[in-house]
Length: 233
Image (tube, rainbow, N blue to C red; front, side):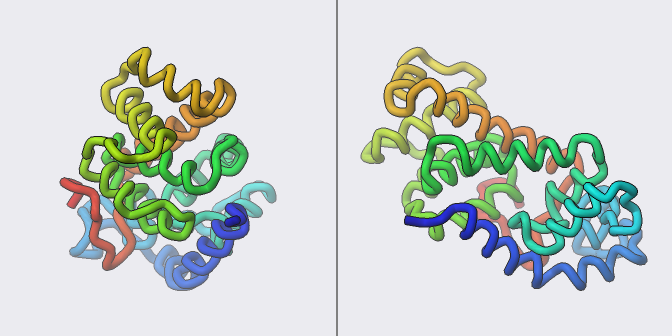
């Protein structure tokens, strides 16, 4: 059985360690529009519309600790992503980080179904950054590529397992159509129970919220990464 916390931590640490030094160096003398491969209002250090926060810009020790955690791999994307943007909100950052961990790891679902829920939300939000991060993580938690393809290409869920089909249908209706049919709700409630269903909706909603942040700040993909999400590049 996969240890979700250990896997996420190890994966994030490896990715963050590879970029932390160069990203921090970029942030010391960064202005938007200097990288011709990026939009004119995007900073090269953060790859979004807000300059990358450096440690000496943070006042509280708690937020310095959060910064250190990001730099040392507490998130998959590191500073060039939603965690880096969220550091600008000193009052909210710790709360959202705690909520994100709880929703991902304490939701009543296994790692595979949790990843599916995150991918569904990313697809319904057309969030290329989230999609690429989580679609690439899917094989590591046992989520099959043909299921990822169903979500990406919005194919019928015929032939999928009941739980997989229920998660996809729920996400498509709640966040794509903004209305969930009685049949879709009943199936999800029967399969997951009310408590886990609430957690599932909140998990997907959390990734929709993050997608809004990423859209607003125009977060770009890591250098050299081409989105696999249709219409996003």
